[in-house]
Amino acid sequence: MTIGQVTKKMNLICMCNVTFYVSLPIIFLLKIYMNLKQKLKNRTTFLKKDITLTRFAWLMSAVNLLLFHYHFFKFALDNVDFHSFNGIVIIVGLVVIMLAANFLVVYLILFLFRFAGRLLLMLQFAISAVAVYFVNTYGTILDESMISNVFNTNYEEASGFGSFKLLLYFVLFGVVPSIYIIKVKIKYGTWKRFLTISSLTVAFLLILSFANASNWLWIDKNATKLGGLLMPWSYTVNTARYFIHQLQRNQKEILLPNATITDNEKAVFVLVLGESARSMNFSLFGYKKNTNPLLDTTQNVVAFSTTSDATYTTAGLKSILEHKKTSDLYELLPNYLYRNGVDVVWRTTNWGEPPIHIKDYQTKKQLELSCEGEECGYDEVLLTGLKERILASEKNKILIILHTSTSHGPQYSKKYPPRFEIFKPVCNSTELSNCSHEELINAYDNTIVYTDYLLHRIIEDLRQLNEYKSAMLFVSDHGESLGESNLYMHGVPRKFAPKEQYEIPFIVWRSDNFKQIKPNVKVSQHAVFHSVLNFLSVQSPIYDEEMDIFK
Image (cartoon, rainbow, N blue to C red; front, side, top):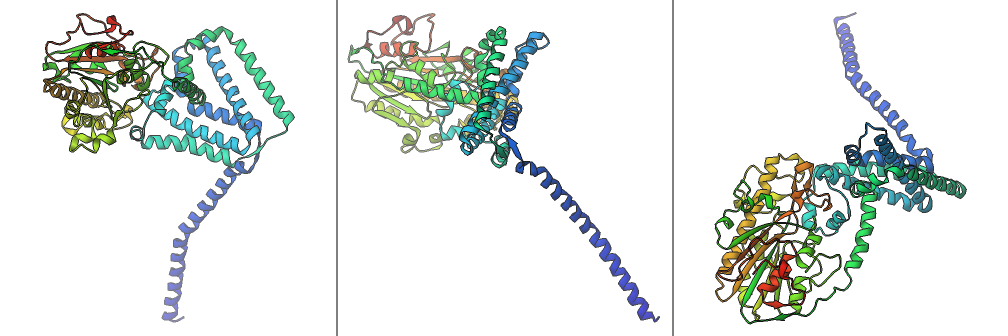
Protein backbone atom coordinates (compact mmCIF):
# COMPACT_ATOMS: atom_id res chain seq x y z
CA MET A 1 0.00 0.00 0.00
CA THR A 2 1.45 3.31 -1.02
CA ILE A 3 1.69 6.37 1.23
CA GLY A 4 -1.03 8.09 -0.81
CA GLN A 5 -3.40 5.19 -0.34
CA VAL A 6 -2.72 5.12 3.44
CA THR A 7 -3.33 8.86 3.68
CA LYS A 8 -6.55 8.56 1.72
CA LYS A 9 -7.79 5.76 3.97
CA MET A 10 -6.98 7.70 7.13
CA ASN A 11 -8.84 10.78 5.82
CA LEU A 12 -11.86 8.60 5.11
CA ILE A 13 -11.76 7.18 8.66
CA CYS A 14 -11.54 10.70 10.15
CA MET A 15 -14.45 11.86 8.05
CA CYS A 16 -16.52 8.92 9.25
CA ASN A 17 -15.65 9.70 12.86
CA VAL A 18 -16.54 13.37 12.44
CA THR A 19 -19.82 12.44 10.75
CA PHE A 20 -20.63 10.02 13.58
CA TYR A 21 -19.96 12.53 16.37
CA VAL A 22 -21.81 15.34 14.57
CA SER A 23 -24.84 13.17 13.81
CA LEU A 24 -25.01 11.71 17.35
CA PRO A 25 -26.56 14.79 19.01
CA ILE A 26 -28.92 15.24 16.05
CA ILE A 27 -30.09 11.63 16.42
CA PHE A 28 -30.43 12.19 20.17
CA LEU A 29 -32.55 15.34 19.67
CA LEU A 30 -34.73 13.56 17.09
CA LYS A 31 -35.29 10.73 19.55
CA ILE A 32 -36.33 13.20 22.28
CA TYR A 33 -38.67 14.94 19.83
CA MET A 34 -40.33 11.64 18.81
CA ASN A 35 -40.75 10.64 22.48
CA LEU A 36 -42.30 14.00 23.37
CA LYS A 37 -44.57 13.84 20.36
CA GLN A 38 -45.76 10.36 21.39
CA LYS A 39 -46.32 11.46 25.00
CA LEU A 40 -48.28 14.54 23.90
CA LYS A 41 -50.30 12.35 21.57
CA ASN A 42 -51.04 9.94 24.41
CA ARG A 43 -51.97 12.76 26.76
CA THR A 44 -54.30 14.51 24.31
CA THR A 45 -56.16 11.35 23.39
CA PHE A 46 -58.39 12.00 26.39
CA LEU A 47 -59.88 14.88 24.36
CA LYS A 48 -60.88 12.36 21.70
CA LYS A 49 -62.33 9.84 24.14
CA ASP A 50 -66.03 9.99 24.89
CA ILE A 51 -67.01 11.05 28.39
CA THR A 52 -70.47 10.76 29.85
CA LEU A 53 -72.29 13.97 30.66
CA THR A 54 -72.52 12.91 34.30
CA ARG A 55 -68.75 12.54 34.67
CA PHE A 56 -68.11 15.74 32.74
CA ALA A 57 -70.50 17.73 34.96
CA TRP A 58 -68.86 16.38 38.14
CA LEU A 59 -65.43 17.20 36.69
CA MET A 60 -66.44 20.79 35.87
CA SER A 61 -67.97 21.21 39.32
CA ALA A 62 -64.76 20.00 40.98
CA VAL A 63 -62.55 22.23 38.80
CA ASN A 64 -64.76 25.22 39.62
CA LEU A 65 -64.46 24.44 43.34
CA LEU A 66 -60.67 24.14 43.23
CA LEU A 67 -59.90 27.15 41.02
CA PHE A 68 -62.22 29.81 42.38
CA HIS A 69 -62.93 29.29 46.07
CA TYR A 70 -59.77 29.82 48.09
CA HIS A 71 -61.13 32.96 49.80
CA PHE A 72 -64.57 31.39 50.25
CA PHE A 73 -63.14 28.59 52.36
CA LYS A 74 -60.62 30.87 54.02
CA PHE A 75 -63.52 33.00 55.24
CA ALA A 76 -65.42 29.89 56.37
CA LEU A 77 -62.41 28.51 58.25
CA ASP A 78 -61.80 31.90 59.89
CA ASN A 79 -65.38 32.02 61.16
CA VAL A 80 -66.03 28.48 62.41
CA ASP A 81 -64.30 26.34 64.98
CA PHE A 82 -63.08 23.72 62.53
CA HIS A 83 -61.56 21.73 65.40
CA SER A 84 -65.09 20.99 66.65
CA PHE A 85 -67.43 18.39 65.18
CA ASN A 86 -70.00 21.03 64.19
CA GLY A 87 -67.31 23.11 62.48
CA ILE A 88 -66.25 20.11 60.42
CA VAL A 89 -69.89 19.45 59.52
CA ILE A 90 -70.28 23.04 58.27
CA ILE A 91 -67.15 22.90 56.09
CA VAL A 92 -67.90 19.45 54.67
CA GLY A 93 -71.53 20.47 54.12
CA LEU A 94 -70.47 23.57 52.17
CA VAL A 95 -68.14 21.50 49.96
CA VAL A 96 -70.76 18.84 49.19
CA ILE A 97 -73.57 21.34 48.56
CA MET A 98 -71.36 23.43 46.25
CA LEU A 99 -70.26 20.37 44.29
CA ALA A 100 -73.80 19.05 43.93
CA ALA A 101 -75.36 22.42 43.07
CA ASN A 102 -72.76 23.25 40.42
CA PHE A 103 -73.01 19.69 39.04
CA LEU A 104 -76.76 20.09 38.66
CA VAL A 105 -76.46 23.42 36.83
CA VAL A 106 -73.78 22.16 34.42
CA TYR A 107 -75.73 18.95 33.81
CA LEU A 108 -78.98 20.80 33.07
CA ILE A 109 -77.40 23.45 30.82
CA LEU A 110 -75.36 21.01 28.72
CA PHE A 111 -78.12 18.43 28.27
CA LEU A 112 -80.72 21.05 27.32
CA PHE A 113 -78.58 23.40 25.22
CA ARG A 114 -75.69 21.19 24.00
CA PHE A 115 -73.24 23.41 22.06
CA ALA A 116 -74.78 26.63 23.39
CA GLY A 117 -74.39 25.13 26.85
CA ARG A 118 -70.67 24.68 26.23
CA LEU A 119 -70.39 28.33 25.23
CA LEU A 120 -72.19 29.37 28.42
CA LEU A 121 -69.84 27.20 30.48
CA MET A 122 -66.80 28.72 28.75
CA LEU A 123 -68.17 32.20 29.44
CA GLN A 124 -68.64 31.26 33.10
CA PHE A 125 -65.00 30.18 33.44
CA ALA A 126 -63.80 33.34 31.71
CA ILE A 127 -65.85 35.64 33.97
CA SER A 128 -64.95 33.64 37.08
CA ALA A 129 -61.26 33.94 36.20
CA VAL A 130 -61.50 37.73 36.11
CA ALA A 131 -63.73 37.81 39.20
CA VAL A 132 -61.40 35.66 41.30
CA TYR A 133 -58.47 37.87 40.29
CA PHE A 134 -60.20 40.84 41.92
CA VAL A 135 -61.19 38.73 44.93
CA ASN A 136 -57.62 37.52 45.44
CA THR A 137 -55.90 40.82 44.60
CA TYR A 138 -58.17 43.44 46.17
CA GLY A 139 -60.26 41.46 48.67
CA THR A 140 -63.38 42.21 46.60
CA ILE A 141 -66.75 40.76 47.59
CA LEU A 142 -69.07 40.39 44.58
CA ASP A 143 -72.33 41.48 46.19
CA GLU A 144 -74.96 43.63 44.48
CA SER A 145 -73.18 46.88 45.36
CA MET A 146 -69.96 45.66 43.71
CA ILE A 147 -71.90 44.59 40.61
CA SER A 148 -73.30 48.12 40.55
CA ASN A 149 -69.71 49.42 40.57
CA VAL A 150 -68.89 47.18 37.60
CA PHE A 151 -71.80 48.47 35.50
CA ASN A 152 -71.07 52.07 36.47
CA THR A 153 -67.36 51.92 35.64
CA ASN A 154 -66.20 53.63 32.46
CA TYR A 155 -63.33 52.63 30.19
CA GLU A 156 -60.85 55.03 31.79
CA GLU A 157 -61.31 53.49 35.23
CA ALA A 158 -61.49 49.90 34.00
CA SER A 159 -58.28 50.24 31.98
CA GLY A 160 -56.44 51.17 35.16
CA PHE A 161 -56.83 47.59 36.40
CA GLY A 162 -55.03 45.97 33.47
CA SER A 163 -51.96 43.93 34.43
CA PHE A 164 -49.98 40.84 33.47
CA LYS A 165 -51.32 39.06 36.53
CA LEU A 166 -54.89 39.63 35.35
CA LEU A 167 -53.97 38.23 31.92
CA LEU A 168 -52.38 35.21 33.58
CA TYR A 169 -55.53 34.53 35.61
CA PHE A 170 -57.65 34.83 32.49
CA VAL A 171 -55.49 32.41 30.48
CA LEU A 172 -54.94 29.77 33.17
CA PHE A 173 -58.38 29.81 34.78
CA GLY A 174 -60.46 30.87 31.79
CA VAL A 175 -58.86 29.94 28.46
CA VAL A 176 -57.28 26.59 29.41
CA PRO A 177 -60.51 25.04 30.82
CA SER A 178 -62.42 26.46 27.83
CA ILE A 179 -60.16 24.58 25.38
CA TYR A 180 -61.05 21.33 27.11
CA ILE A 181 -64.76 22.22 27.27
CA ILE A 182 -64.98 22.88 23.52
CA LYS A 183 -62.81 19.91 22.46
CA VAL A 184 -64.03 17.04 24.65
CA LYS A 185 -66.55 14.56 23.24
CA ILE A 186 -69.58 14.22 25.52
CA LYS A 187 -72.09 11.35 25.57
CA TYR A 188 -75.30 13.07 26.61
CA GLY A 189 -77.42 9.99 27.33
CA THR A 190 -81.16 9.55 27.17
CA TRP A 191 -84.01 11.71 28.48
CA LYS A 192 -84.84 8.97 30.97
CA ARG A 193 -81.32 9.08 32.42
CA PHE A 194 -81.42 12.90 32.43
CA LEU A 195 -84.68 13.04 34.40
CA THR A 196 -83.48 10.39 36.85
CA ILE A 197 -80.14 12.04 37.61
CA SER A 198 -81.67 15.52 37.84
CA SER A 199 -84.40 14.35 40.24
CA LEU A 200 -81.95 12.43 42.43
CA THR A 201 -79.59 15.44 42.62
CA VAL A 202 -82.40 17.80 43.61
CA ALA A 203 -83.60 15.32 46.24
CA PHE A 204 -80.05 14.93 47.56
CA LEU A 205 -79.63 18.72 47.86
CA LEU A 206 -82.93 19.06 49.73
CA ILE A 207 -82.09 16.23 52.13
CA LEU A 208 -78.62 17.64 52.73
CA SER A 209 -79.98 21.15 53.33
CA PHE A 210 -82.51 19.99 55.90
CA ALA A 211 -79.98 17.68 57.54
CA ASN A 212 -77.79 20.75 57.98
CA ALA A 213 -80.68 22.87 59.31
CA SER A 214 -78.96 23.44 62.66
CA ASN A 215 -76.33 25.52 60.85
CA TRP A 216 -78.77 27.69 58.85
CA LEU A 217 -78.37 30.48 61.39
CA TRP A 218 -74.58 30.57 60.83
CA ILE A 219 -75.05 30.51 57.05
CA ASP A 220 -77.69 33.26 57.20
CA LYS A 221 -75.45 35.42 59.41
CA ASN A 222 -72.59 35.17 56.90
CA ALA A 223 -74.72 34.92 53.75
CA THR A 224 -73.60 38.24 52.23
CA LYS A 225 -69.89 37.45 52.37
CA LEU A 226 -70.27 33.77 51.51
CA GLY A 227 -72.55 34.62 48.60
CA GLY A 228 -70.15 37.32 47.39
CA LEU A 229 -67.30 34.80 47.21
CA LEU A 230 -69.22 31.92 45.64
CA MET A 231 -68.53 31.40 41.92
CA PRO A 232 -70.43 31.71 39.64
CA TRP A 233 -73.42 32.43 41.88
CA SER A 234 -72.00 35.69 43.25
CA TYR A 235 -71.99 37.60 39.99
CA THR A 236 -74.91 35.82 38.27
CA VAL A 237 -77.43 36.19 41.10
CA ASN A 238 -76.29 39.70 42.05
CA THR A 239 -76.30 40.84 38.42
CA ALA A 240 -79.92 39.75 38.17
CA ARG A 241 -80.71 41.51 41.44
CA TYR A 242 -78.94 44.66 40.20
CA PHE A 243 -81.01 44.89 37.01
CA ILE A 244 -84.26 44.15 38.84
CA HIS A 245 -83.51 46.95 41.29
CA GLN A 246 -82.41 49.24 38.46
CA LEU A 247 -85.78 48.78 36.79
CA GLN A 248 -87.41 49.72 40.07
CA ARG A 249 -85.10 52.72 40.59
CA ASN A 250 -85.58 53.96 37.03
CA GLN A 251 -89.23 54.47 37.67
CA LYS A 252 -90.35 58.07 37.63
CA GLU A 253 -88.98 60.09 40.55
CA ILE A 254 -91.38 60.86 43.36
CA LEU A 255 -91.74 64.62 43.14
CA LEU A 256 -91.27 66.66 46.30
CA PRO A 257 -93.63 69.52 47.27
CA ASN A 258 -93.08 72.78 45.41
CA ALA A 259 -90.62 75.24 46.97
CA THR A 260 -90.35 79.02 47.04
CA ILE A 261 -87.30 81.31 46.90
CA THR A 262 -87.89 83.86 49.69
CA ASP A 263 -85.48 86.69 48.79
CA ASN A 264 -83.52 88.24 45.91
CA GLU A 265 -80.12 88.26 47.61
CA LYS A 266 -77.40 86.83 45.39
CA ALA A 267 -76.04 83.55 46.76
CA VAL A 268 -73.94 80.76 45.30
CA PHE A 269 -73.35 77.34 46.86
CA VAL A 270 -70.59 75.05 45.54
CA LEU A 271 -71.09 71.41 46.49
CA VAL A 272 -67.97 69.30 45.87
CA LEU A 273 -68.64 65.57 45.78
CA GLY A 274 -65.49 63.76 46.83
CA GLU A 275 -64.54 60.31 45.60
CA SER A 276 -63.14 57.66 47.97
CA ALA A 277 -61.91 60.28 50.47
CA ARG A 278 -61.57 58.98 54.02
CA SER A 279 -61.40 61.44 56.89
CA MET A 280 -58.54 59.73 58.72
CA ASN A 281 -56.06 60.91 56.04
CA PHE A 282 -57.00 64.60 56.34
CA SER A 283 -54.81 66.64 58.68
CA LEU A 284 -57.98 68.65 59.41
CA PHE A 285 -59.09 65.57 61.33
CA GLY A 286 -55.83 65.04 63.17
CA TYR A 287 -53.81 63.04 60.64
CA LYS A 288 -50.09 63.23 61.48
CA LYS A 289 -49.01 64.13 57.93
CA ASN A 290 -49.85 67.61 56.68
CA THR A 291 -52.24 66.74 53.86
CA ASN A 292 -54.24 70.00 54.20
CA PRO A 293 -51.58 72.75 54.17
CA LEU A 294 -53.97 75.30 52.60
CA LEU A 295 -57.28 74.55 54.32
CA ASP A 296 -55.51 74.39 57.70
CA THR A 297 -54.78 78.13 57.39
CA THR A 298 -58.05 79.18 55.71
CA GLN A 299 -60.53 81.19 57.75
CA ASN A 300 -64.16 80.11 58.13
CA VAL A 301 -63.39 76.46 57.41
CA VAL A 302 -65.19 73.96 59.65
CA ALA A 303 -64.58 70.22 59.43
CA PHE A 304 -67.05 67.55 60.53
CA SER A 305 -66.28 63.86 60.67
CA THR A 306 -69.25 61.79 59.60
CA THR A 307 -70.11 58.45 58.02
CA SER A 308 -71.44 57.45 54.62
CA ASP A 309 -74.59 55.41 54.16
CA ALA A 310 -72.92 53.19 51.56
CA THR A 311 -69.50 52.09 50.36
CA TYR A 312 -70.01 52.58 46.62
CA THR A 313 -70.54 55.65 44.49
CA THR A 314 -74.11 55.33 43.22
CA ALA A 315 -75.67 54.77 46.65
CA GLY A 316 -73.29 57.25 48.31
CA LEU A 317 -74.28 60.05 45.92
CA LYS A 318 -77.96 59.24 46.29
CA SER A 319 -77.60 59.66 50.07
CA ILE A 320 -75.91 63.04 49.65
CA LEU A 321 -78.52 64.35 47.22
CA GLU A 322 -81.74 63.04 48.79
CA HIS A 323 -83.69 64.69 51.63
CA LYS A 324 -83.86 61.60 53.86
CA LYS A 325 -82.66 58.02 54.04
CA THR A 326 -84.98 55.95 51.89
CA SER A 327 -84.96 53.12 49.39
CA ASP A 328 -87.42 55.07 47.21
CA LEU A 329 -86.30 57.43 44.46
CA TYR A 330 -87.43 60.86 45.53
CA GLU A 331 -86.58 64.00 43.60
CA LEU A 332 -82.89 64.72 44.18
CA LEU A 333 -81.40 68.06 45.25
CA PRO A 334 -80.22 69.35 41.82
CA ASN A 335 -83.44 68.26 40.11
CA TYR A 336 -85.58 69.76 42.86
CA LEU A 337 -83.85 73.14 42.92
CA TYR A 338 -83.69 73.36 39.12
CA ARG A 339 -87.43 72.75 38.91
CA ASN A 340 -88.03 75.48 41.50
CA GLY A 341 -86.06 78.27 39.83
CA VAL A 342 -82.45 77.86 41.00
CA ASP A 343 -79.62 77.96 38.45
CA VAL A 344 -78.02 74.51 38.76
CA VAL A 345 -74.74 73.43 37.15
CA TRP A 346 -73.32 69.91 37.31
CA ARG A 347 -69.70 69.30 36.26
CA THR A 348 -68.14 65.86 36.46
CA THR A 349 -64.95 63.89 35.85
CA ASN A 350 -66.63 60.86 37.41
CA TRP A 351 -69.64 58.61 36.84
CA GLY A 352 -72.23 56.60 38.73
CA GLU A 353 -74.52 59.45 39.78
CA PRO A 354 -78.27 58.84 40.10
CA PRO A 355 -80.62 60.39 37.48
CA ILE A 356 -79.83 64.11 37.02
CA HIS A 357 -82.42 66.23 35.16
CA ILE A 358 -80.95 69.69 34.62
CA LYS A 359 -79.99 71.76 31.58
CA ASP A 360 -76.33 72.56 32.37
CA TYR A 361 -74.63 69.15 32.74
CA GLN A 362 -70.96 69.09 31.68
CA THR A 363 -68.57 66.14 31.41
CA LYS A 364 -64.79 66.13 31.49
CA LYS A 365 -64.58 65.87 27.68
CA GLN A 366 -66.80 68.91 27.24
CA LEU A 367 -64.82 70.95 29.76
CA GLU A 368 -61.48 70.02 28.17
CA LEU A 369 -62.51 71.83 24.97
CA SER A 370 -62.14 75.19 26.72
CA CYS A 371 -59.26 74.23 29.00
CA GLU A 372 -55.54 74.73 28.44
CA GLY A 373 -52.59 73.46 30.45
CA GLU A 374 -51.47 70.50 32.52
CA GLU A 375 -54.45 70.72 34.87
CA CYS A 376 -56.90 69.80 32.09
CA GLY A 377 -56.08 66.12 32.52
CA TYR A 378 -57.02 66.18 36.19
CA ASP A 379 -59.93 67.30 38.37
CA GLU A 380 -58.81 70.91 38.04
CA VAL A 381 -60.62 70.90 34.71
CA LEU A 382 -63.83 71.25 36.75
CA LEU A 383 -62.79 74.79 37.69
CA THR A 384 -62.38 75.94 34.08
CA GLY A 385 -64.28 79.22 33.69
CA LEU A 386 -66.23 78.53 36.88
CA LYS A 387 -66.12 82.08 38.21
CA GLU A 388 -67.15 83.44 34.81
CA ARG A 389 -70.04 80.94 34.66
CA ILE A 390 -71.33 82.18 38.01
CA LEU A 391 -71.09 85.85 36.99
CA ALA A 392 -72.92 85.13 33.73
CA SER A 393 -75.91 83.61 35.51
CA GLU A 394 -79.23 85.40 35.08
CA LYS A 395 -80.50 84.11 38.41
CA ASN A 396 -79.75 85.19 41.98
CA LYS A 397 -79.55 81.68 43.43
CA ILE A 398 -76.92 79.33 42.03
CA LEU A 399 -75.98 75.74 42.93
CA ILE A 400 -72.72 74.39 41.46
CA ILE A 401 -72.06 70.65 41.89
CA LEU A 402 -68.55 69.38 41.11
CA HIS A 403 -68.27 65.59 41.02
CA THR A 404 -64.58 64.71 41.36
CA SER A 405 -62.64 61.45 40.99
CA THR A 406 -59.47 62.51 42.85
CA SER A 407 -58.92 59.64 45.28
CA HIS A 408 -60.30 56.74 43.26
CA GLY A 409 -57.96 53.74 43.02
CA PRO A 410 -56.17 51.71 42.11
CA GLN A 411 -53.82 54.15 40.34
CA TYR A 412 -53.78 56.90 42.96
CA SER A 413 -50.51 58.28 41.60
CA LYS A 414 -52.25 59.10 38.30
CA LYS A 415 -54.92 61.27 39.96
CA TYR A 416 -52.81 64.37 40.60
CA PRO A 417 -50.26 66.47 38.65
CA PRO A 418 -46.59 65.60 39.29
CA ARG A 419 -46.02 68.77 41.34
CA PHE A 420 -48.37 67.40 44.01
CA GLU A 421 -46.26 64.31 44.62
CA ILE A 422 -45.26 65.56 48.06
CA PHE A 423 -44.95 62.23 49.82
CA LYS A 424 -42.54 59.69 48.34
CA PRO A 425 -41.99 56.92 47.34
CA VAL A 426 -45.38 56.16 45.81
CA CYS A 427 -47.16 53.08 44.51
CA ASN A 428 -47.48 53.09 40.71
CA SER A 429 -48.87 49.57 40.33
CA THR A 430 -52.47 48.52 39.75
CA GLU A 431 -51.76 45.48 41.93
CA LEU A 432 -51.86 47.29 45.26
CA SER A 433 -50.76 44.27 47.30
CA ASN A 434 -47.42 44.39 45.45
CA CYS A 435 -46.67 47.85 46.87
CA SER A 436 -45.38 48.51 50.36
CA HIS A 437 -47.90 50.04 52.75
CA GLU A 438 -45.81 53.23 52.83
CA GLU A 439 -45.87 53.58 49.03
CA LEU A 440 -49.61 53.03 48.90
CA ILE A 441 -50.37 55.50 51.69
CA ASN A 442 -48.06 58.11 50.16
CA ALA A 443 -49.80 57.90 46.77
CA TYR A 444 -53.21 58.19 48.42
CA ASP A 445 -52.11 61.05 50.67
CA ASN A 446 -50.96 62.98 47.62
CA THR A 447 -54.53 62.80 46.28
CA ILE A 448 -55.69 64.42 49.53
CA VAL A 449 -53.07 67.18 49.12
CA TYR A 450 -54.45 67.76 45.62
CA THR A 451 -58.01 67.81 46.99
CA ASP A 452 -56.88 70.43 49.51
CA TYR A 453 -55.56 72.56 46.65
CA LEU A 454 -58.78 72.22 44.61
CA LEU A 455 -60.96 73.25 47.55
CA HIS A 456 -58.66 76.18 48.32
CA ARG A 457 -58.91 77.37 44.70
CA ILE A 458 -62.70 77.21 44.84
CA ILE A 459 -62.73 79.24 48.05
CA GLU A 460 -60.39 81.86 46.56
CA ASP A 461 -62.62 82.19 43.48
CA LEU A 462 -65.72 82.58 45.65
CA ARG A 463 -64.03 85.24 47.78
CA GLN A 464 -63.65 87.39 44.68
CA LEU A 465 -67.40 87.37 44.06
CA ASN A 466 -68.20 90.32 46.30
CA GLU A 467 -71.79 90.56 45.08
CA TYR A 468 -72.57 87.04 46.29
CA LYS A 469 -72.96 85.36 49.63
CA SER A 470 -71.08 82.13 49.03
CA ALA A 471 -70.36 78.74 50.55
CA MET A 472 -68.42 75.62 49.66
CA LEU A 473 -69.15 72.15 51.05
CA PHE A 474 -67.01 69.08 50.43
CA VAL A 475 -68.35 65.62 51.28
CA SER A 476 -67.23 62.21 50.06
CA ASP A 477 -69.42 59.45 48.68
CA HIS A 478 -67.57 56.84 50.78
CA GLY A 479 -64.12 56.02 52.17
CA GLU A 480 -61.32 53.73 51.01
CA SER A 481 -59.35 50.72 52.29
CA LEU A 482 -55.59 50.84 51.76
CA GLY A 483 -54.50 47.36 52.75
CA GLU A 484 -55.94 47.36 56.27
CA SER A 485 -57.20 43.85 57.07
CA ASN A 486 -55.92 42.92 53.60
CA LEU A 487 -58.72 44.95 51.96
CA TYR A 488 -58.27 47.45 49.15
CA MET A 489 -60.44 50.21 47.70
CA HIS A 490 -64.15 50.04 48.63
CA GLY A 491 -67.43 48.22 48.04
CA VAL A 492 -67.59 45.91 51.07
CA PRO A 493 -71.27 45.71 52.16
CA ARG A 494 -71.95 48.55 54.61
CA LYS A 495 -72.81 46.37 57.60
CA PHE A 496 -69.51 44.47 57.24
CA ALA A 497 -67.34 47.33 56.00
CA PRO A 498 -64.34 48.52 58.02
CA LYS A 499 -64.37 52.12 59.21
CA GLU A 500 -61.86 53.10 56.51
CA GLN A 501 -64.63 52.62 53.94
CA TYR A 502 -67.34 54.73 55.61
CA GLU A 503 -65.70 57.39 57.81
CA ILE A 504 -65.69 60.43 55.53
CA PRO A 505 -64.87 64.17 55.63
CA PHE A 506 -67.55 66.87 55.65
CA ILE A 507 -65.82 70.25 55.20
CA VAL A 508 -67.63 73.59 55.03
CA TRP A 509 -66.53 77.13 54.18
CA ARG A 510 -68.80 80.16 54.04
CA SER A 511 -68.20 83.83 53.32
CA ASP A 512 -67.72 86.27 56.20
CA ASN A 513 -70.60 86.98 58.59
CA PHE A 514 -73.14 84.91 56.68
CA LYS A 515 -75.01 81.82 57.82
CA GLN A 516 -73.13 80.85 60.96
CA ILE A 517 -72.70 77.14 61.57
CA LYS A 518 -74.47 75.52 64.52
CA PRO A 519 -72.16 74.52 67.40
CA ASN A 520 -71.82 70.78 68.17
CA VAL A 521 -74.08 69.85 65.30
CA LYS A 522 -74.19 66.19 64.25
CA VAL A 523 -74.06 65.82 60.49
CA SER A 524 -74.87 63.09 58.02
CA GLN A 525 -74.76 62.98 54.23
CA HIS A 526 -78.46 63.98 54.24
CA ALA A 527 -77.56 67.28 55.94
CA VAL A 528 -76.44 68.55 52.53
CA PHE A 529 -79.98 68.78 51.15
CA HIS A 530 -81.40 70.85 54.01
CA SER A 531 -78.30 73.03 54.44
CA VAL A 532 -78.37 74.03 50.77
CA LEU A 533 -82.07 74.89 50.99
CA ASN A 534 -81.39 77.19 53.96
CA PHE A 535 -78.33 78.83 52.42
CA LEU A 536 -80.11 79.62 49.15
CA SER A 537 -83.26 80.82 50.99
CA VAL A 538 -85.44 78.11 49.48
CA GLN A 539 -88.53 77.50 51.59
CA SER A 540 -89.93 73.99 51.34
CA PRO A 541 -92.36 71.79 53.30
CA ILE A 542 -89.78 69.02 53.44
CA TYR A 543 -87.04 71.22 54.96
CA ASP A 544 -85.76 69.74 58.27
CA GLU A 545 -84.09 72.28 60.54
CA GLU A 546 -82.51 69.57 62.69
CA MET A 547 -80.56 68.28 59.69
CA ASP A 548 -79.39 71.78 58.69
CA ILE A 549 -75.81 72.69 59.68
CA PHE A 550 -76.48 76.45 59.44
CA LYS A 551 -78.21 78.56 62.07
